[in-house]
Image 1 (cartoon, helix red, strand yellow):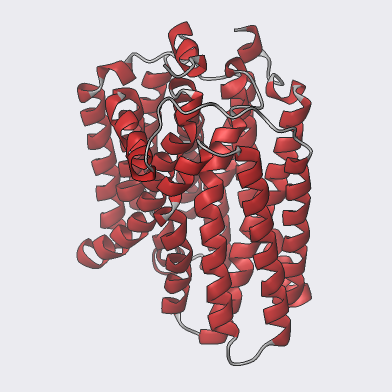
Image 2: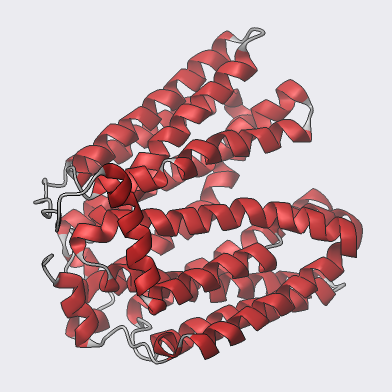
Length: 420
């Protein structure tokens, strides 16, 4: 409890500070890259469909390989996997700078190919990253570490796109890729400074396919993990409206591109503030109830946003979607880390990544289809109502999630338990 009450509990570990700095470089690099590659692809094609292909080309290998990446994260040295995959990402971005500088008729195809290769690196690197973080701090500091890492991610969501846009206007895509390469390389050096950690021995010898399935079976056996993942999946699937914000900015609120920028930033600001707050006030008591209320608050904020015709009210509603999602993110990550034994963390993280990635991709598709059928505003507030219904169903069907306390010693014992 002393460690949890300390807002700097995780920061007192030098290797966590190195991990956090590596996270700053990696998050800024990925956010700036998304702006640069999207803008360049649209300039080359003038086709919104080309942007859709861009997201799909990265998502296919990143999600398709996640379960396999989780298997290797529990079998091989996680630090080595991270160093290899982060270097592969760095090389891909450096090659994007070269391709952009040279130009030519094959530029688009080469950029797509490099994005696909970066997606492969993500598929193997993301599960290892999630599992590796738990070896840097003890279980008592997991919630605090999640808050700091989440704060870095949200701050990057605000700073990265803005900085990427400025650099694009000043340096062109080539210069932006060069700076992203430097940030990715700095992130790699931050990880390299962390000492190797002992790898847990697998509980049993399994074939690759059986090992991948064991992560799914583990998640299915724990109703708390399943319930938290279901809340995340359906809240993003039905309550997500980011893909429709340009329509609100242009046709409903009539605030233009500047207003759209503020609308995109508002949730990240809310999430950042609440994650910084969580470093001092970790949500470890009544965590399950807080998670359920947080997702419900997210749904209510979505409904308010959809019904609003006033820009300031819409910004406030979007701000609170970020506030509630920030609380939920801290609790969901802590649930995964505290309730998963170390030898399973890579595979369970992979299952979670597939859930989250699928909900993001399918959520954008669902938003477009629903808006075309019901109308933009109606589809969003209907999605908010569905989110509230999902909260009610999970609360009734998963009483163990409703009663969850993250400071329960049984959860820490489970997190530290050696494989039988």
